[in-house]
Length: 431
Image (cartoon, rainbow, N blue to C red; front, side):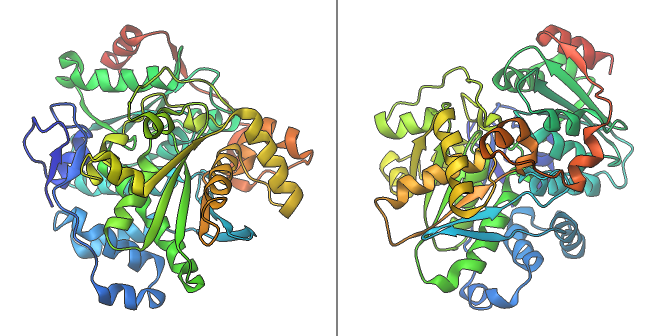
């Protein structure tokens, strides 16, 4: 499999090079040259396949022969050693729980897969790769956990000061070893801009081999298609059109779901459920793409003003807005609406969602009102205990901390504060 830059000003790339570099030399995102649908026999036997077997069949074409079959099977098996259950909440609405991994967030899948791919590529090398990652919440913890102790990899995580939850901060600042946290005076967009600028900075790139573990990296992005497939397997017996409502920030997750659709999974439609950071909602309404500075909300992992992966979504739809609109709807909701949804979900079903899941639920309700014969699955992307101050205040219930959270909550934070790019660059040159 070859990958090309969506800016179309760079040479084609191998999978390994795309993983190692993160971005193409022309600053474009890498995109697979072709996507070949899975054969009919695969879908006929889907019920007989394990999650790992489904995932291996799906990812194999994107890796090609660069990782041998047995090694890739092991990588997939290690990536997916937890469950992805569906919970029915009300007529026409279910939730897909993606928080049963080590950091209790959906990003565990992509982070673990990418870390193991890099570990494979570094197996016979003394070279060191520095992974730069900007986080608006859950990415940092997932990457820290996924890459902890991986040979030949150092990780630097940039997160916005005061704009992640206490649990999220502990997950990315307490592990030590090859994990370093930088607390940035700014927003997630500022963190993401620093990472992107670093890749263009010859002073840094001449000294360090840099890659990114954000969803711009193909090995972080593509594996997120797996759980859309697992959900379809669980729900296909309903014989109803299946629609996914995805809480959307940087849009890598929903874009990966669209890859599953391209592979032949019969997904009827996608819903991008936004908080107040709603550039895509506005784009689908006005046909004008107008990024804005991000706004802090209670669903902080979605506080992204200029989502990087939206260009991939446009490419999947041949950059035709009408084709895109036929496959994607988008709605935007305020913090007050999100809190009301948290309360409603708990009151009606006893289910405790997190703020991001609540936004996904609202998107599901909005779509279902005009498409009553569909089954809408909203993604519950993180465990509610990661947002205790918000959730417990709304549902008036003390939530017991799961073991994954207990393991870090009392650990000492270790982070370096940086004000701007120059301070960040100075830190990296001494790193």
